[in-house]
View (tube, rainbow, N blue to C red):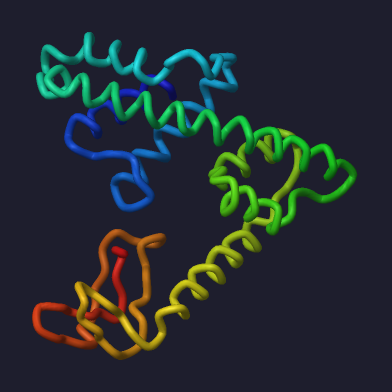
Length: 207
C-alpha cells in the first residue's frame, strides 16, 4: 500500500496537484494521510521523513521513463515534507483522543457520531481513519449519524448566505447554491441568476 500511495502522490504533485480540501487536492491529501497513518502503524517514527524518502525511491526507479518527476523533484519533496509534518501533529493529537474514547467505550456498542464529528471538525482527524481504528479495536461507529451531522453543518453554512451571494463586489439575490462537491466532481446545473459577468447556479461541486 505504501508503495502504491507514494507512487500516486509523486506523480500527482509532479503534475501540478497540491494537497487541499477540494477536488483533486483532496484526493491527494487523503492518499498522503493514509500513507502516513499506515507508516505510523508499522512503527515508523514521526521524526523520520517517510514520504520524501519513499518519493525519492519512486523517482530513482521511474525517473528514466517519466522525466517530469525528476524535473519536479524539489517540488514533490517540498509538498510531501510539509504535509507529513502537518499531519503528524494532527495524527498524534487525534490518535490520543480517539484511544481515550475507545477505552471509555469498552462495554458499550461503539463510538458515537458526536465524538467522531468532534475529532473531524475540531481536530481535523479524518473520519476514515477514525472508522479504521475503531473497527480494528473491535468496536462499531455511528457512521450514519456522523454523515448526518456533516450534512447539518453544511446546511447551516448554506443558510448563512440564504438571501445573497457576493462575487467580486457584485450582489446577486436569490436562493443559495447547493454545494455537491462531497458527492461528485461534476454537476449538471441551472443558471438561476446573471448579472454582468457573474453567474449564479442552483448547484455546484465547487466553492
